[in-house]
Length: 272
Length: 288
Image 1 (cartoon, rainbow over the protein chains, first blue to last red):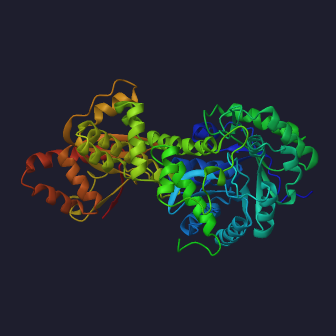
Image 2: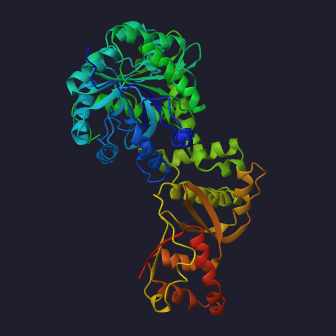
Image 3: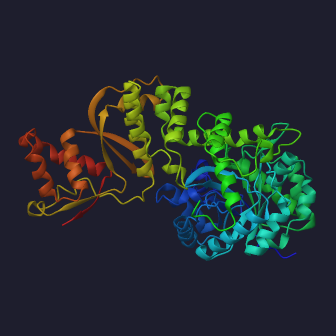
């Protein structure tokens, strides 16, 4: 199956803890970097300096947490314009965010809250994604979330809801393999059945990350190595779909860059 | 709900309800009660299970608690990261409680967590007065310095002038010359001398309560590193005028004509100040 975007290889999230290393001139065992968009919207200081240095030798993809695309608040057009300006400036390979809402009534909870998987919410978010893409001048790459609750009103399975969103809004998807595992554990679903229903022709990117397993539920903490179960799902994707641009995320208790390079090497090995 | 799209009233109500529930200052139970008192519950929902069914492993309350815990933890963590010295001064537990109160009074309205603490210093000042807790006013000044250093960090660097740049100006140019300063340089006016407290916090020593004493502190960034530096009060007045865009001549005259200023001392000191500013990388341009 043709990927939705060119396969850029395997990379990592660009984090401040590694700024010194990634600009030191040593060879880096990664193909590309992903930035958390919001960390670069209000700075011209060291973060931007490092980003521009990194961009000289690597592709960069942008991944945000604040478009609030599932919310009933008005679209934040100023935020979208800032995102567009940054994407143009660094010539980002693509720009993404999440299938979620982050705030309402003018307040931001700074979390990825679940949308109810209803026809009403689907129509609402579809329209907003279309408008956001118009304002950004490019297709969005939207990530399936980790969720910790469902709503009684949910009437459509998540993977089907997201697939319809992608088709109706003509957007692309970031299939976070760890999120598939976390949400499946939390809601008693079969992650492979989920993967079998993903509209792969819409998927531009993967995420891999670690999580915290509390027994009764998992939390998407990004503070640990990718677990064996998630590696197995990633392998399923390689065997059944093929290689797609992949980013390893690590945001808490960030280890040395060599540890991330080890995770990247493992992903590369599975891609064959 | 006048600004929502047609047909999304139930979605809007659900989101307002959930945000109220998971961001309440006093936790989930209080959020559930408040949202009911405020008429935010989704239409037709009598019990929590009518909105969030839960599952065999977690109750609806336990599922919502995951979001409630994450809200406070994430935002408190962001604010502590901005003001680590205040946590060292007040203790983690007390600062966390104060931050929970602050977030109740100033919930985030920005896409960026960088803006979350912009009201914290004046809020601590007010809290110092209402609680009769002078250490909170001192903490407010520590916040001002640490946030000022962070603001400086986000500015693009500029190439500094040589140390003798101002001294090299011909005398007839002083009247009209304007100095350009490194982006992000601010000269704060504080009610407390926070220098020792900030130093002690940085070295993980016991942090003393900063004494009440008017001080001026410059915050700036050089070579992508954050700095702060105590500034002489008269030097601070001159910097205020120059940073406001006044010419060297007007700025010096404005300071010299203040009744508390000894003009001879001022004229004896300015050369050293200019050299010090240049050596710190503050001076980046002279417009003549």
